[in-house]
Length: 457
Image 1: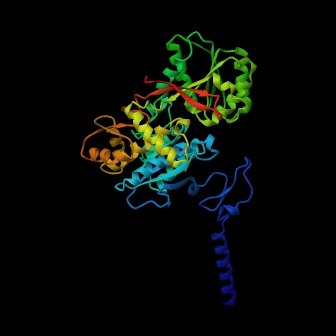
Image 2 (image 1 turned 45 degrees about the vertical axis):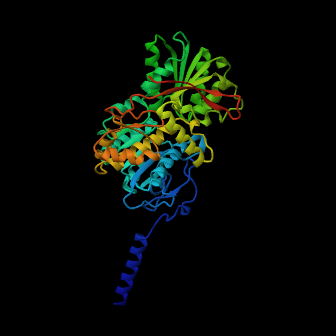
Image 3 (image 1 turned 30 degrees about the vertical axis):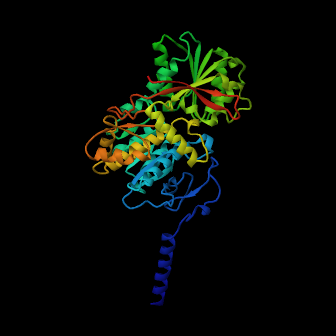
């Protein structure tokens, strides 16, 4: 009898040991790094993994106490927040947080902003979209930032049924996605930007394009530019591509362009824009070349790796415009800019493209979420479609109640954004948006961006 009891005890002990075995319980249990040099994390199933685990991807940033109030509209924010401030999209997060605080300050509406980090990785963006819905109950999402990320998120949108309002994904192909009408944008398609960009060089200019060749954003904008330039009888000498993060490929593309000695070179890159700027500045074959750049380059990081700012005098670019002060959107933007500087220690919202588009995306998402007859994805998307005609209402904390109650009464509103009118077409795209031509004041220290002109294609 005793032998049987001992055997049972040993068996129970053995089973318990197996059942309770964990490789880790906290991140500190995971020592070392992956082969790529990144940290290891303890996952939900207690395994040490290299990818950021689901529970670390997202965090409630508004309210500041990190607690989602009962009945609050939960808005997910999918942005690249990792890395130094000059190479991530922290300004997008700031703009959305500001909008969320303004909603809560109204004391009539309760909103939670749950911020998720994409790390600039489309697969992580898609995972963040799933996590912010499943773990936090997000009913609408602002983001993702890049076209590549939106294409990846789109694979889940029909399954999850939660609308997405991207502030900065501009690839023309997003228009035709099979998304059940759930993907919207407050940034204009590059079909608009490309017409303004292609008007900058003379049709007779000897022109090369250097671009990141594994990005939907850069490929889409390159193709749109080529078409727009051809429409004015211009032709591109060569297109030279390199993979994102490939320093050798970048340098090889610059060397081939230098051999052409073009009068104009169009540079299309996002996080590779700073090293590309350094490479062209050092090339003797490009010492007199005029450089065109795009919205993704308009960040302080553009000159962060330069030892001399002289090359910046030969740079012009295009991107979404901050509207003129006399325009209704301009007045809304001036309020945003003032509030943004006060909230974020004087940081200039004009130093990064798409800040106002992000603020507008959050307002559009929140207004639609509160005004919809219910918080299903279909109902919110249908309400987004009602923001582009009717009673004019400017974006901002003072107009929240007017916007929502007007919609709830069955009337439409014409939402005046800080980035321009929120004129959605049947595909959820902005069909009319101001595009700026910008340059750089390289006499300032550090340099600053200048708005040379505004064009509405």
